Length: 435
Ligand SMILES: [Zn+2]
Image 1 (spheres, rainbow, N blue to C red):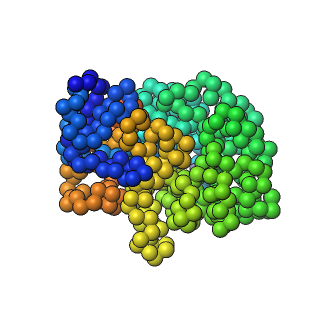
Image 2: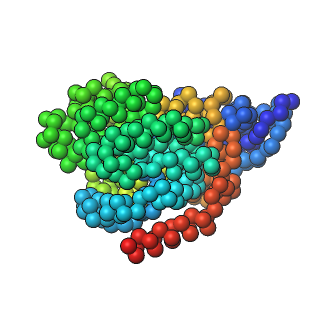
Image 3: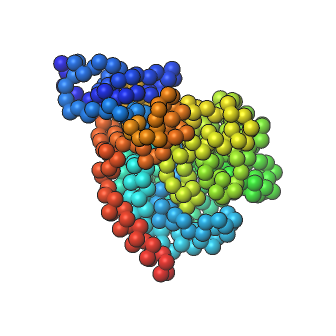
């Protein structure tokens, strides 16, 4: 018998989400040194160590949220139901200008992290300001974040111009890279960054081999602005300045032309689909079935909570699966398996970390989400993919493991208390309301 760190045993169903969709019924997952050491059935007599019986649970790879602005939890619900420009100019930007600081981000990200863990998310891609505050929280609690400071050509909280934002990113790479903190560079969008800024950011991404996280082709207004300024649609504009490649993770991609979809495939650009944000801000519907057909890696993002307004990735794939069926008037579009791939395997591919996370396979990090299949609304259980996507909710997540460590147990988030989260929310609500 070999001694290991943790054995998850009697798991009702393991959905490995590997390339062959291997599944195990009444399965076991064996964890050692933060990694999946063994996976299959009847492994209990080969190993000993701390054991968690998971009789009524469905095991999935830790879910991956590929686009958010975590600290915006503190702005959740402000100025809803307004046109995008009114929402930004009247509500979001003035408050951000006044309040966003290291402390704001540190508090806001705690709420986000609590909520994401509770919903089974083990890795997220963030773009905001004071990412050092996010990194401090993630290193403390042991959750993975791909973190990018938003870089714009005008002053932001934390940087007076794009060059300062880029320099801060370089410093961040050197100071903060860890198992949990994966630095990325975050040029905000083609209409807020000049070609020079976009190119400088790509130089940094290539030099350090990090993700290039950008909003792209989100609204009709963006397409119009970029066309007026550069004579090209946003994705063609990026192609013309030579920055489309495998490092690029493009959030939204709501309005690509057919030619632009071909370009994304040709350059191996990854897409983060954010359907609920696109619906709430009335940006439109991204042609996800077309992009998947073309072979583009499409993952899923919640976007910030000021435009969603939650961080429930299971809810997000459920929305995606139904939205595209409705728009195409075709129920075969984006089936439940494909939807779950967006939140697992494609999430990992989208951040170039598929060698480490995104499927349950021996040698990968032990990032695991267990769903409580004893909930009445998940029964009878004919097909676990269908049940998770169409009947499931983030709140059905029971246990979350990151790097082999238990972060959520019996639906209780261990690293941050519910009371602390509620206190933080109340404190900032009072400050923002009384400004
Ligand atoms: Zn965004």
